Amino acid sequence: MNSKNTENNATLRQWQLFILAIEKGSILGAAAAAGTDPAVVSKEITKLEHLLGEPLLDRSRSGVRPTWLGAQKYKEAVKLLHEIHEVLSASEDATLRSSTIRLAVPGALTGLIAKPLAEFEKLQSLNHTPIEINSYQNLDDIQPENFDLIICTQTLPNVRMIAYDIASISYGIFASPDFLAQNKRITLPAQLEKLPLIHSKSEKVLLQGPLQSITITVEPQIRINSDEAMISAAVEGLGIALRIPLWEAESLTKSGSLIQILGE
Image 1 (cartoon, rainbow, N blue to C red):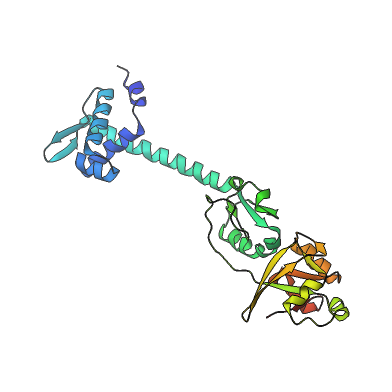
Image 2: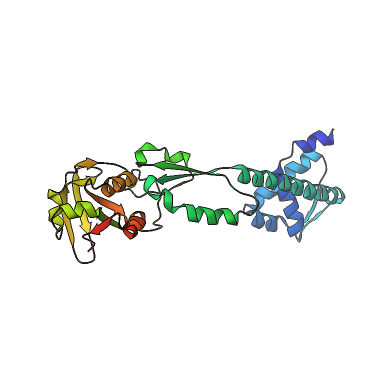
């Protein structure tokens, strides 16, 4: 019998159970460590012994101990499994280092993720992970299975998706100083319905604040599905931009290019 070829027919699982049996001193202990049934451990080790043509364990009521051949094979098996573990670990590390993290981010939020991404990269030390950022306007435009992480501000379109709340976004209504100078003072939400509005679509919009909530009917004069374009149109005095993230308009309000209205 060619023992070399016979050993190649043995499974890693059999060698693992054999090692556990010696280290735990019993079939019962090996089964407990492996999370399986003692009969399974005994059966697999018996198969291994049949493949080698010699017993590996001396069995007794007090437990098991290796035969002369078992002691030799134990040393070889431990070394073999250690080498396999090292190879798999190196392969896994290389895969992790070379894999790309793909993010899908709403266009309006791409400017917010630069800082957390920079902090993430600093934590990577020398093993930098490539990051691919894909901007989207609507969840229906992307294939969720192609991304590792999707940042979403919309209602999930699929019940199979699992989402976690990570932050809240506050929105405001903005117009340019020139536009406001040419229109009468706006003090009530209902006045918006009669003015040129910049928004993504015709709909009923719920305006919420700490003091009141009211729904208005919006028929935009200018329809734009991009926050950046809405802001640009408002700066040019083309109308009142609805639902602009406060963080995105902050620098323009400080410079006086935009004024927030109906802040309450």
